[in-house]
Image (cartoon, rainbow, N blue to C red; front, top):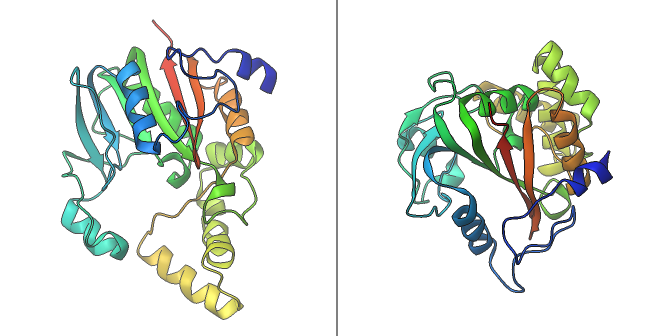
Length: 253
């Protein structure tokens, strides 16, 4: 399956290596510059960016974007202490990014979801909603962290079987175990009492952790499995420092 997926990668940037282990666009280029260059090649028209916070994607002049988040800026600052002094973008649309319930079907030329899908409790359902709001041939622009290069390094990769169960049964069955894993392997709480106390707190405030984690290989497997749910073309899969950038184009009508 991976060979089939990798062979379908088609880059519109002549400087990009089209492989499942692609390199950044130029040696020494910053992560954000690589993101910008890819955005310039693929984004135009009207679209959304979900959860941009203090790092919105720099988009080309031919594109217009509205920012979606589940909270206003003041609420985000209160909820996430680590964001208190960050220059957050103003929220244009208050909505749950996993559902996009306020966004009409086939209304967007593009959706940007950088470092977002790992925060989603039900990734397959989220992908369905992201594609739902895209027009035919619309672009889903995603950057997904590789867990090997982040604080998630000690966590096991999420399996396709796990994601399918989240999709078919709903994610509540696994929510607490995700928080427990986060507490033990990311925050390094060493005792059962410490873990339980932290998990209770995080659940009570509905804190947004990385519920699911992948390396680039598992991420490609996810893309392959996604073909059973939505119709799209994989335009680009590129290693960009500690993340992978994916460009998925919704199938034309």
